[in-house]
Amino acid sequence: MKKTVLLFAAFSLFSCLLCGCGASGQDKTYDLDQVAAAISAVAPVPYPADMDDEYLTGMYGLDPADVEEYRGQYSNTNTFTDELLLVRAAEGKADAVCEACEARRAAKQEQAAMYDEVQAQKAQNGRVVVRGDYVIFVVAGDDGRIADGEVNEVYQEIDKAIEDALA
Image (cartoon, rainbow, N blue to C red; front, side, top):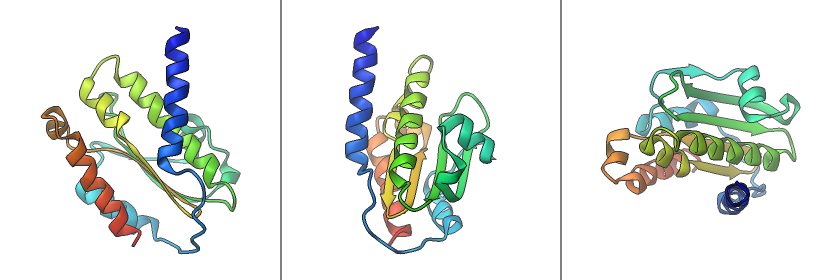
């Protein structure tokens, strides 16, 4: 059990380093609806339900004071790990939002690993992208392609959609 906890903690720390938590100093503003639409065009959330303040607090542990604006959807069935969350964090709070998203991704991966390898791979490869005060969290993608071993290709398409939307 200790090994599992330590491995989980090390993986979470490593993931935060990879996601680049930390403000990049950009002052650019983004239309969250447009960014969400661009990502959803390549990786729609199946059976989507909109996130609300209660969801952000309960599932992400986010303090509403840390969030200026957000758009989010999650799959409204317990068989999919898909989630999309875009946040304009309060000034200086992007790191806290990024860490909450990484913890959510890791929790989804750990839970899915118990019952569905495809969903676990999807969550494990989820993305957290930070641009200034904006944080984007994506766990999504075509289950069939992921099952066929194309998880990297699926997430390359998601990465491109994110980069194009933030250009």
